[in-house]
Length: 348
Image (cartoon, rainbow, N blue to C red):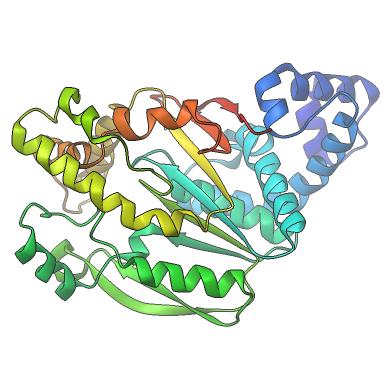
């Protein structure tokens, strides 16, 4: 016997039995229902709108799953229905209310699925008639030569990524142009493979008519914290040298506040255990090596990840955002197996 979900996919008229099951499924998770504005009064309309959108986005989504994720679309349909479609509808509604381009921040550690979610939202928003721009914090890196000069000034900045390695004015100018509906705009892009993996700017994109910016990064929207907290910081912030580095990076974070002030909303992709990002990175490197590409050893990965935890430790900078309703608009929990957990909003 078909489920209500399969009934929707067939394109047939959904019977009352299936409709009731769909209602219950939409309302059972109260936190998620509240986050996406679903109530007993509007649930039928929500299901109808989402059903039409599902059918229209399905061809492009199926191709994306097979090409980019190397999975069968059926494996991702429930996530599409429960999370990505309502999130796309929510962003479109927010943009409509603003009556100007929406700047949507997406905060998440490596491996939380920021890029995948941005690409799926782009497909959905296209179907809703909105033109999106995917922008990564990585696209705002300083040039290779500027970063070489930066390392001369501060040898501790051995890897690109922490606060201080980005061209903040470049980001401010771009976002302000988009908010003011200037078109076309020149969007910077970054090639991570340049200079043996050190990375450098590459040919920028010329983009016209942006409605929604999906601005993602591993510390997008993160706020500076009280420097006294580093006195009792968790590992790997252990030595006095570690604590000095963490305090200095925290101070550099103040420079990013004007950029975060341009965000209209912030989504947090939150691993239920921040240490998962280390395992996810190891899995990704192992997959690259298995595919015949170069990759880091486990020891190199641990050194790399620990460096970023020393600069902006998730327990100090990310976890407190969960308790601050003024900081994050939507929280999406990520389980160790990459599946989605609770979805909730303190501002719903």
